[in-house]
Length: 330
Length: 265
Image 1 (cartoon, chains in turn brown, yellow):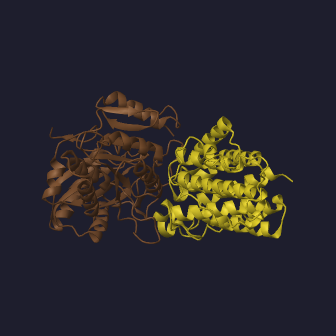
Image 2 (cartoon, rainbow over the protein chains, first blue to last red):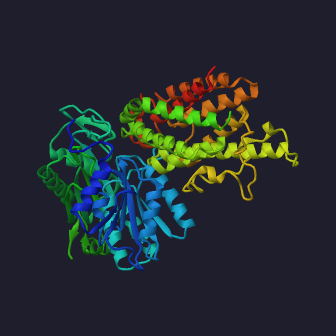
């Protein structure tokens, strides 16, 4: 396996060192592994903290900046951060209006953020939490850990970040975060597995003629393995899964997201099919995003995330944002 | 069993986890995200450093420091789960040691320490309280320097250890929300804990008790193979999770392998 790394052990720190050099708008604590905005806290503004395993770049560190996150806590590759990181970040970003933790629904992330939130509360930092669980590939039942948080995390961070910038109170910021999650759904398909640096070989093997349907963002196998098919057919599989769970209509925000190893060319091919599908259902992609945003290392494939918009969400999506990976309007 | 024994146990556990790192990671690759061995190895390496840096005074303190370090260093689900297990085991040993000392001093507490129910102690909430403290050892002596298990005269009995495992198991089940049969570490930890408690009641020698616990843990881990996962990342696979041994159950077996090894005999 070839990778552009110095060592598997140092890959997260080396990534953060590169981000610090490339983005002087950020302040990066390399020892604690926390990425902050340059000037903090913002008095009277709810602080937004997210985090999760590394390997999903630009999520989350690439979304730190004006209009989005105040801090991100990257863990080891595909491993949630530890409570110490989250507690430290929460203290630093608290401008007196409290802190919202944006947490993807994975057992480890939930446990570590929960432990951090309890200690923050004991130490006088008011913390709210929103769980993102948008992946329709997982049945939400007593028999699973619940739906995974995937692409909608970006939507929650962007829209909630825009509202927090206006000085809205923690309760209001948490409400909009929950609303974005509730109105969003995702589904992913992989053409290849990914290779975790420390493991050194692909997490699963996929034959030339096969794709893995209903994947998450950690190289974990999906719901089923099916014969490879055209972009049109695969886009339809993903969109049917989304539409079955949340009937699509009206104005929608759509992201066609690459898993890290997919050419942008192919993502646009998929986007055309997704847009056609939406028209068929009487929905319109009034806002869109195409690119690698919530990735799974070097995995080839895509996920599609759809959010049912309303005027408030559209306005907040359009609000200025200035982060390494998402910037417009300022 | 004294603090030296518990330090040796944790160090031997760390050694076996390093040795089995790639096997655990391969099990995790089949139904998870291919990092279980790597994460535990990183955590136990930090535990080894923490133990040699602070040499905790009592058996309870050794386990509390182990748990605190795992929570602080590992991340993911295995850090909080194993960390919570060790911390609750440690607080249980400390509480029973204090009761035994009080009993010896004739302070009116039940002097038959073996009768103190292990699950009746006041354990901290689900593994959170105080884990950011600098070291478990500092928590040992209560306010006013009441005797904790820093008292080197206090020896841990098999009944104490079984009670500690019962407390650790209960804390893991509460934090993770898992029950036996969900294809998790609980499937190895629960039968091994029962075997240990049974052996303590029967008055077996430690090495025989650990043999029984290890056999039960191994059987429990093997029995996860046909199961469909209902907790954690493997649950996303639904039926496809069947046919693979649970990596958490497999790593739990190593705790008992190490326990058997350090008991000698």
